[in-house]
Image (cartoon, rainbow, N blue to C red; front, side, top):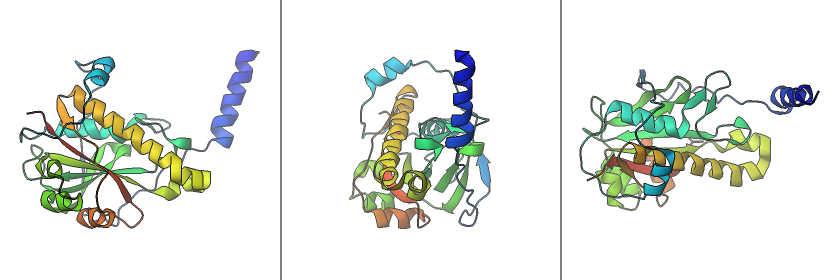
Length: 234
């Protein structure tokens, strides 16, 4: 009886009061076709405990490029789909509203086989689409107050927020709390995944928002919250 009751409650929660929000697809501002990334790897050589213990903010990089699968692994850790039916993602989200969008600013030679440019990550099919070609390391570094690690990284992951997705359900609390909490969840996933892959990263929150938006050609409602420079450990 208890099991049936719990099942009924869960069903009502899932189908009634809990509505999964699927973020709208974006096509008008994406310049390139989707590039499907290698499937995420679900087993590694580093345990969660080891990654937590060794995690540090690292600002020095060797200059060697990343592999495409490593970039894909980082993006999956940040916002990848981990439950294909309900489309749940790697980082928890208030009401599964998923307000975050992740962009990649890849420098020349930053990722093997990937043209330099700005890319947008699509969690639903684990792919990236080019927003515009070119190496924008210098411009992004300038927008980030000259923090040199932004300019020296192989790639920069930029986590952005679409506030209205969460605010529509949770109002001001969703906008001022839940979205930022979620950015932290995703960011820690990036840290731990980077550590597990032997890569280095640091969370950068000091930058000129409008300049970052201009460098990446972001849509008006995609607000940058974090920059994560990523490279190989020296």
